[in-house]
Amino acid sequence: QVQVVESGGGLVQPGGSLRLSCAASGRIFRINTMGWYRQAPGKERELVAGITSGGSTNYADSVKGRFTISRDNAKNTVYLQMNSLKPEDTAVYYCNAKQPGYSWWGQGTQVTVSS
Image (cartoon, rainbow, N blue to C red; front, top):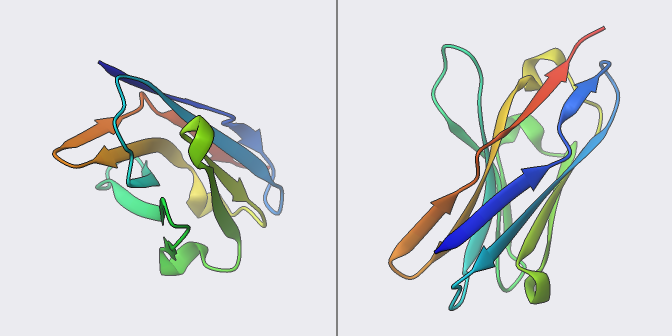
């Protein structure tokens, strides 16, 4: 059994910053890719940013230059630093962890950008 737990969401004004954290624990062999997805009301879940165990990253075009994903492999933890937040970034943010043959999701954390 593997648990994926996110933290760090909340309410922030436009232009503000938030840092999300996600930790995977349990019967982990080797997590390859960790990533952040988000789902806004009425929309499909979309990839925000991903990072491999080797440190390669990819970002959605809408967050490039504003969000930074990082990872601590020893702790199976991934972070998402979100700067210059916009109202359109409002969504539930989900963490995902993958290892060969498996994919785990967290329960999600709400991020609301509003004045």
